[in-house]
Amino acid sequence: QVHVVESGGGLVQAGGSLRLSCVASGSVFSIDAMGWYRQVPGEQRDLVATITSSGITNIADSVKGRFTISRGSAKNTVSLQMNSLKVEDAAVYYCNAAALVVPGRPLIDYWGQGTQVTVSS
Image 1 (cartoon, one colour):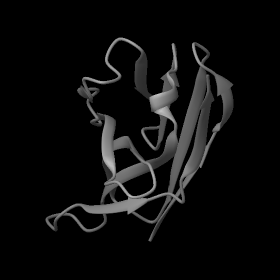
Image 2 (tube, helix red, strand yellow):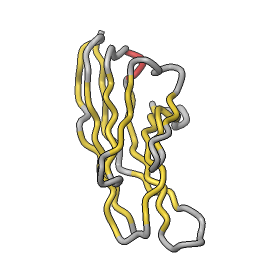
Image 3 (cartoon, one colour):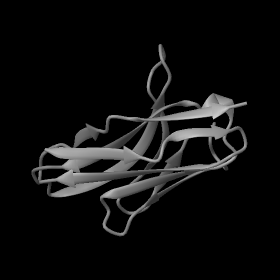
Image 4 (cartoon, one colour):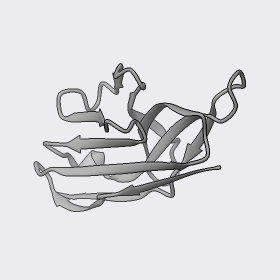
C-alpha cells in the first residue's frame, strides 16, 4: 500500500505563484513516475506534468513555460512550481505515483486526496 499526500494548495491572485508538494510512502519495491493532474467539477482529470525516476518530464502545453515539475533526491517526492497562474489554472490538483510493488508485476497507480488551487482575477 502506498500513501500519497499533497500539500501547498491555496488561494492566489492571477499572475502569482504556488508550489505544490507530494510525498509517497509505503512498502513498495520502487516508485517509477510521479506526476500532477488536475480536475474541475464536471470535467475529466487532466495531466499537468509527470516526471520519471530518471528525470524525464512531460508537461501539458497549457502550462508549459509556467509550471516546473521536479523530483526529490529520495525519489518519493515530487513538487510542482506554478508561476504566472491564470484563472483557468484553478482546479483540484492530484498527485500520482506509479509504484512497483512486486518486481516483474505491472506498476500500480496511487493517488492523493487532492489539493485545491484557487486563482482569483
